[in-house]
Length: 460
Image (cartoon, rainbow, N blue to C red; front, side, top):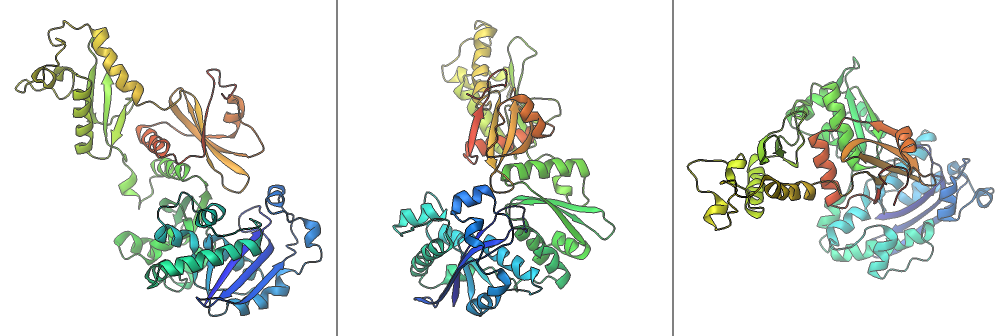
C-alpha cells in the first residue's frame, strides 16, 4: 500500500516550518482507496513569497484545524503504507518534524517520484512536478496546492508503476529508515540533519574535528558513513559524537567550501583530500621571447590554463594543442632533440625554429589558447540556489580571479562591488577552484551568469 502525500508549508527557517495544507491519497497500486485533504493552521507566519506562490494566506487558515487535531487521522491513513511524494525528502521530513513536536516518532518507508522518474523516464527535460506532468500530458489544475499536486503525483506514480512492471526499480528506490545499522544514538544525530546541499563536520566526544564532507543531501551522506563497511566508515562510526553542518543550497559552493575547510583545518580523516584535486597543469611561460607551453606538476603562485586529475589526459590535451596551434616542440616541455618536430614533419612549419617567424606572430597562437580557456567574462557573478526559498547564492569572479561566495534575497539586488563584498565570504583562489568553477559553467549547472561592467557598478 502507498500513501501519496503533498504538503504546503509556511516556508522559513529549516526545521521550523509549519504545515498550511496537506493531502494524502491511499493507493493499493491500482486505485485510490482513501483520502485526507485539509488546510491546517500552523500558528506561524506564512512567508510572503510562499503566500504568493500557493495563494494560501493566514486569513484562510484562521479556523482550520491545527496539526495535533489531525495527527491521528494521518497516522491511520498512512499505517502500513509507503510514503510517496515528489521530493519525498522534504514532505517526509516535514511530517516527522511535526510529529516530533508532539512527542511521537513517526516512521514510514518512503519513495521519491523525482528519483523514480529519473530512473524510469531518463530523457525528460525537467523533473520538477509542474514541468514533468505537462510533458507527460497529466493535468494539473492548481500547482502548489496540496490536493492538485498530490493528485498529479498519483497519476505520475501510476504511470511509473506501469513502466516498472516487475517493481524492481521501485524496490531499489525505497528509502527505508530501518535498513541502516546505526545505533539509536546515531539515528538521533541523523534525524537532526537536513536533506539538502551543504558541508558537514564530524566531531568526536572531545570536540576534535574528525572529518569534513559535502553532499547534495547531507543527511543521506552522513547515513552512508554510518552504514558503510570500509575502514573510514568504521572509524567514523566508532568515534562520531556530533555532526555540525552548514547549508549552501548550491552544490558548487558546497565543494568549494569543503575543499577550503579541509585545507584550513586538516582533519585527521581527510588525509586523501589534503592535497590538490587536480595535480597536473598546463601553463604558458612568458619569460623568453618565444613563449613556451609548459606541462608540469601544479605549483603555487603559477597561473594555469587547465589543470587535470591525471597525467595521461593532460598530455593528450597538451599534444593536441601543439598540433592544432602548430607550436614548435622546442618551445614546449615536449621538446625532444631526438624526435622529429610534428609541425615540420607534417609540412606545417612556419620556420619558427629558425627564428624566421617573429615571436609576436608565434606568441599570438599561444594567446589564442589562453583566451579560449578563460572564464566567459572578466568580472561576473554565478547565480545558483540559495540555502532557503526566496534566496540566491552567488560566486564572484573579479578580473578572472575567484574571490568568494555569498547569498542574497531574491527581491534584493547586488549590482555593484560594494554590495557584493558586503555579502561575500572571501576565499583564496587556486587552480582546483578554477577547475571546479569551469566545470560547473561548462555543464550549465548555474541558474544564470551576470556579467559586470569594468567598473563593477552596473550589470549588462
